[in-house]
Amino acid sequence: MYPRLGVNIDHIATLRQARKTVPNPDPVYAAYLAEQAGADQITVHLREDRRHIQDRDLKILKETIQTRLNLEMANTQEMLKIALYLKPFSATLVPEKREEITTEGGLDVMRHQDALTRTVNMLKEAGIRSSLFIDPDLDQIRASHKAGSDAVEIHTGKYCEAKSLPEENHEFQAILGSVKAGRKLGLQIFAGHGLNYHNLKRLLQIEEIEEYNIGHSIIARAVFVGLPQAVREMVELIRSKG
Ligand code: PXP
Image 1 (cartoon, rainbow, N blue to C red):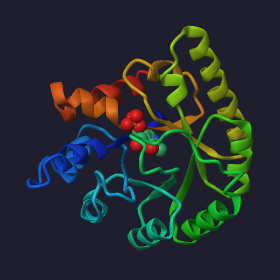
Image 2: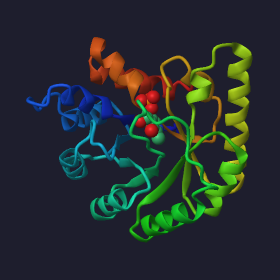
Image 3: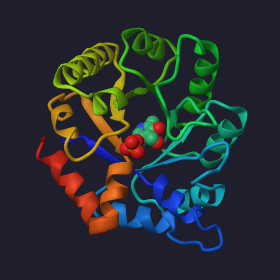
Image 4: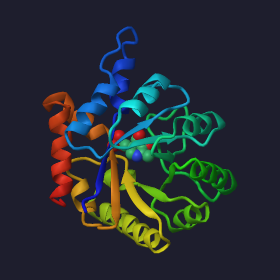
């Protein structure tokens, strides 16, 4: 089995929101094209400030997506209510700060153990797969398992932004160690953030990673070659295993 590709379409909505007067480009159409090109999942982050994805997008995506809808969300009452009502296939809990450009760093699961455990349980009762977005850190892996989460998504930002080979090697080893430890505990292992057509190749050696959620690099490439081709190239890369 090949790892799944979740295409994050937030940046299609970012472009639309740059001109709020026109409903273009529509993330719903982007999701359709991504699925047609081989995406296994569509990922969206409904942020508290609604800077890109809107409630309307989420509702229509839930009705129209033919693969899986993965909702990235902060652990707030508002988002939990939306998730329990809409019932996406999965919910990925992420930290969220208003002033950040994108999700910087993973959740501190130990610090928010009780609150995250409560949310994971409620998602589970609603039949929604839960995933916690964490840094490649063994304590966070253990805490995620303790919270009862089905999966963890390893934040690959530091690996992707490494400025030298030794730094990259260090981050790769941290990811590898976390993946192995997580699998031993029975967690499903996903990865995402900052991945592109180059830095993904090395991670594909890690057989245990079942799913990649990738946004910026695919949407950036789509500007020049079109979304179907940009998605197809990523699917082909994953299927070639690097
Ligand atoms: N996974 C999670 C949990 C994220 O928060 C993000 C960023 O929205 C991504 C994956 C995708 O990151 P990128 O846009 O850098 O590919």
